[in-house]
Image (cartoon, rainbow, N blue to C red; front, side):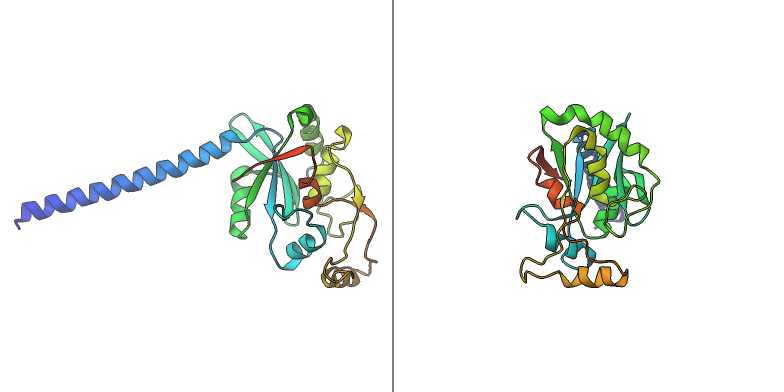
Length: 222
């Protein structure tokens, strides 16, 4: 094969590879743009639970549906072409995070994000909920999971945001392992270290409980 043909072949191959790479990048961008454009103001982003650690312990005593297994939640706020997630997390407390960074953080932890949306008859309460959520930003995370007005945990943050609209309701918390009928070992040790009695029966909320609301509909997985 002549030197000209070899160079021509290599150039064609490089052009083909470059074309594939360009198409792949455009596809990724288009897919991301589609996900963003399909989200609406006030959408609720639920993060799937892990099987171990704090995440697994939360899910163990709160899971109500086979198709819903969550340990975190945030609410979407759109500002022009930008999208943010308002949520309360152990790292950063009550915060306003870009949607991109929020999703990336969950993916880095091996967790997925599932979109839920208020049914049409309840969506009129979204503007007030977002307004309320913004007033709660900057508060620390509630590591005791016992309600107070100075710190929030994730589902507590969302319940408070929609409280005026009565979208969600507080329920007696339980830390009982459904398999044993006794207090989950993780939670027993968790509160023991804090010198706090396990708050069994105290009012509270959790991501699985919120996801089970009949006022919401599951939309898709991001």
